[in-house]
Length: 131
Image 1 (spheres, rainbow, N blue to C red):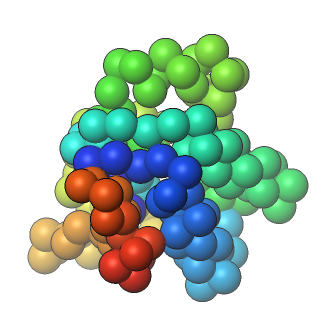
Image 2 (image 1 turned 30 degrees about the vertical axis):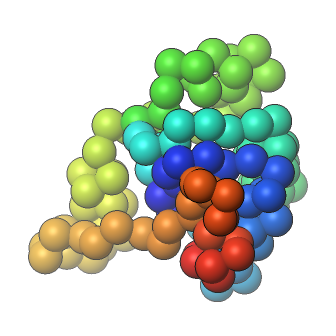
């Protein structure tokens, strides 16, 4: 999933729904979040990530990979003791290629970007139905 612009309480429901949809589709999913273009987030987003981490621990499977998170987000995750529960990467494309190789798939052709979650300019992805 790619988050850009602002992701706040208004987008939290859709953010959570997207994560749950992936879980319904795949047991123990690998959730990859591209956060390079995320300008703003509030505590509800941290709460959604914490719930996803808790579900992974309860079910004993799944991974969360954060791609290019801001220094501020890393600081918040460190303060909330959530940083140790995620993996950090620098590139979505390299991460997806690595995951495909680990699963026995081919890394070619170049992977496409995952679904988009956006809240920017007062109109969130939840309002547009993106996921």
